[in-house]
Length: 478
Ligand code: NAD
Image (cartoon, rainbow, N blue to C red; front, side):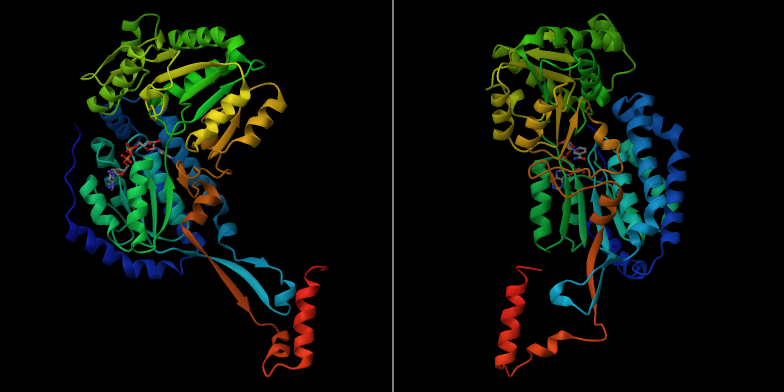
């Protein structure tokens, strides 16, 4: 079980206080300064590629291609996107006068929130910590970062990187688990950006409420995937298995389970089975020996996912591929399950492992009803060549994001908001949305040469009464 020493309450308190004056000074920081910091952060990250490959091998046995695509690429792209656009994002946005404020001039100012806290999960420990850091720095804040205690090797490299680029009075990384997180959450931060489970998200939001601190919550959940009878099945199976098995299924936006139309379900299951064999091996031993499949983060997590599979099978689910798991080796085989009964735990818990339940459906309305009866997911994926089907599903459901004939890639589009809805999250990350999450949108209104307000000062006369009535009435026509 990975362990990291908890950081003492006093150390955290001192760091927080030392960041106070920096946060005030950063209010006046210019785009150029912030861009230079982002460039230094990006370069420090890229200079540690080899060290991080080794650290990821130790913590997650994560293949290098996956480290490149899911850890380096999103952070470097986030930095590139912000560097190119920051001066535009920071520029005050002029707003025209409205009828009731004629004669004034208005703009929206983006000011840094101040002292921010970023708490990360273990599944993408670089991406989920440094991605929000890019947005926080772009917006001119100080930051305390708290990575998950589950990835000690990666954290050691990230801690060194952060200390090289920033003074601790601006950005500091503290290590530890629940206790450290609780010391941090007791402080009156100006904003908290949390990535993790809905259960801990509720603890974070309750703690933030004590200081009325604003929060961005990037949470998880069960992202449903619908494959209808018109879908390009081969393409769907290829991409769904990629989305499911990257990082061994430990991905917040992974397709959690699939509803496939009964007329094509057998073929779809066969195509998914073939994708596993082509990518990881033809036999259970070959698959277990594949260097291209990451491991569960701890034996406890492997045991949890293995137990979900065993319980579903004990209740009547059929194993269409895989099913093997070994706790100590942190291994769960890529697994396809069919005929999973509704009462099995795997039908309700976020799976967060390389296991895909596939359910045949007859009636799309029933699938939509099931999706709407569950907590709102982080993502919903539709595979169909019939636009009306896609529109029907998209209009009648809710989720953080939605993809048509794609999955997971919505995360990589820096121009799109990335976030959940209710149980899967509050607020957005990425690009300008991340910049806004870490900014206070401050309303600015200045007097013009004339003010119409004087017509409405007391003592109220017949004229002011007529004018006020006319003003209210006129809003209906103008
Ligand atoms: P987690 O909620 O268990 O832990 C996240 C962080 O919270 C860790 O740093 C941990 O130390 C801290 N923490 C744990 N218990 C706490 C407590 N009682 N009080 C205060 N802090 C506490 O999540 P995890 O297991 O690290 O990550 C998996 C979850 O994260 C999944 O649900 C996944 O879907 C979600 N996730 C979401 C996104 C996203 O962008 N929406 C990205 C990655 C992961």
